[in-house]
Every structure is written in C-alpha cells, then in structure tokens.
Amino acid sequence: MGISAMRFNRGGYLIREGFRSIKTHGLMSFATVTIIMACLIIMGSVALLSVNISHLIKDLEKQNEIVAYVEDEDDTYIEEEAARSLEPAIRAIPNVTNVRFVSRSEAMKNYMDKLGKELMEGIDETVFRHRFYINIDPIEALAETKAALEATPGIGTVRAQQDYANTFIRIRNIVTLVAVILMAILVFVSMFIMSNTIKLATFSRREEIAIMKMVGASNGFIRLPFVVEGLVLGILGGGLGFLAQWGLYELVENSLGSALSDIVQLVPFMTMAPTILAIFLGIGVVIGVFGGVNAIRNYLKV
Image (cartoon, one colour):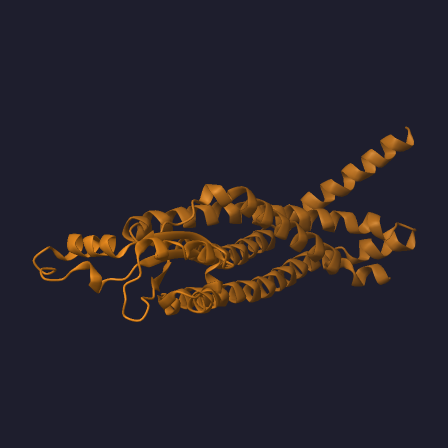
C-alpha cells in the first residue's frame, strides 16, 4: 500500500471517528446544535433590526427635506430670477444631493390646492416667499448643512426636521451597539457550550488518548476527530439557524408588513440571504473548530 493510500485511510478513519462521536453523544450533540441555533437567531434578529433601521434612515435621507426660504431685502420682494440665482451656492454646500426651487406663486398655488380657495381668499402671493427644498446625504449631516444654509447670503429661515432625524440615528446607534455586544457574548457562550460538549467525548476516551500519546501519535492525529465533530456540529447549527431565521423573518414580515407598508418597507430577506448564510456558517465553523480544539487541549499535555 502506498504512502498516499495510507494517509487517505488514516484521514478517513479520523473523520469517521468524529462522526461516530457525534452519534455516541447524540443528546449532547443535539443540545449543542440547538444552542448554536438559538444564539445565531438572537444575533441575527438584532442584526436584521439594525439593518432595517439603517434602511429606514436611508429612506429618510431621500424623503427628509430641508426648506430654505429666500430672504426678502429691506421689505422689498426679491424677484424670482434673483432668487433662483442662489441655487449654485446651495448646491455647492457639502452633503447636498438635490435642490428644488419653488417660487412664491407656486407656493401659494400649493397651499390653495391643500386648503381650498375659500380659505385663501384675500391673500396674495406676496405673503409667501421663494424657497428651496433640499435633500442631504448622510442624514447625520443635517445640523451641519442647516448651519451652512443659514450662513448663505440671501437665505433667511431654514427649517429642518432635525429632532425627527436625530431620534432615528440614536435608535440605530443603540441597536448596533447592542447587536455587537450580544454577538460577542453569545459567540463566547456558544464556544463554551461546544467545548464542554466535546469534553464529554474526550473524558470517555482519555485513556485511549494517553496511550496514543505514549506510542508517539501526533497532536494533530489525536485532535482531528474532535475538530471534525465540532466542525460538523457548527455547520449544522449555522445551517439550521439560517433556515429558522429565514422562517422567523418571513413570519414577522407577513404579520407586520401590511400594517407598516405605509410607514416603512422591510428589507426583503432574499436580498440578504447569501450574506446571512455565509455569516451563520462562518460563525458556526469558528465556534465548532475552536470548541473542538479547546476541549482536548488539556489531554494533549500528557
């Protein structure tokens, strides 16, 4: 038998031993996969909440408008052409993405359409001022952009829904921070549980491991079955966690989507599915391999 065939057989034996250990400790293996799933679902749910809040803020950046009113000079009404000439200066302000000019006559017409001609009777267009509707990106620059607009010659009052925007920014930052903290805690918990599960297998085989060490077996040869066990459990936990997260997200989307459709559109799960699957499997593999390596570390010191 050639060296390559011997290595193949040895590798096959070690992998079979890893799967055999999973079957032998079926209940604990099931508990480990379930814990990994639960941890991943909690992490995923918080992360998806953060993604949807960020998506909402992006929508606000498109919809939220700053209104900058053109200042009339010394009680004389500035002409439309002169008001329009301020647009290049506004567009030059950092973070401004779109500028729309509305003349005083157009503003009056808009109010008449909303309130009715009867309520606007006796009011002429001189009551109104020329104005610019301005979109910015990112929304975090709202206060900075508002200050720059107020400092622009020819611009008077500037109105912005700053409190509304700041509320969503604070919510997003809090959720993101919570997501990061939860991920760190739950990954640690998952690794701890995985390590203890595999330690049960190593405890029942501690004499076998000691004999293998005394006859010259390498640490890698001894460790591989436990790494395989952890790897398989991690992949199972990650894959099943992804499916459970998918089902949970679809349930929430179907339950709340219609009620919230006029306020916010949830990000479709399928647009994020490849990334979520890769992250879940990646975390599962890291947890599994680390748990397998850590569980047998003390027994390799024989």
